Length: 111
Image (cartoon, rainbow, N blue to C red; front, side, top):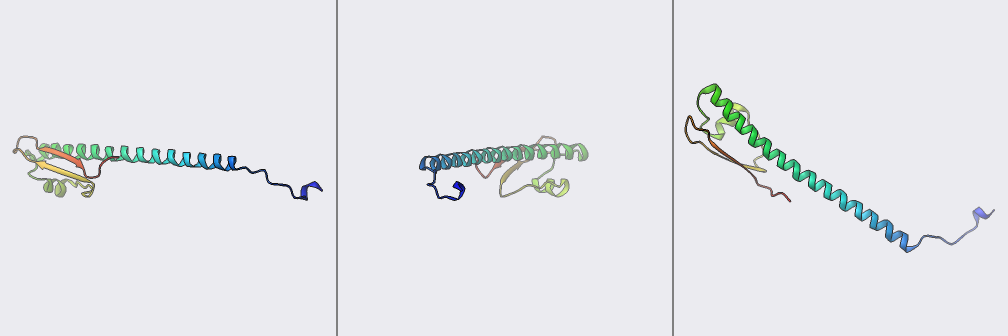
């Protein structure tokens, strides 16, 4: 009946400290991975928005014979939708037959 006898616990402070250290290390690795994924995702969104705007402008020129006069025209007629809280789009028309200058800037800095 030695199973039921009370013995002194063998848990040491060294084991507890090592377990907490491993746990904290795993949390930091996970946080770093999430941050890297978030940064890459934001960069891809920025690139996709630039590409979509350029393609829409070229598509408008191919169909209508002139480049769109404003970003509002693109939004209205070519269903361009983007998060205005996250991106700033500067659309500068240069003429009917000259490709407009399109600049897309992320408002939220990448970390």
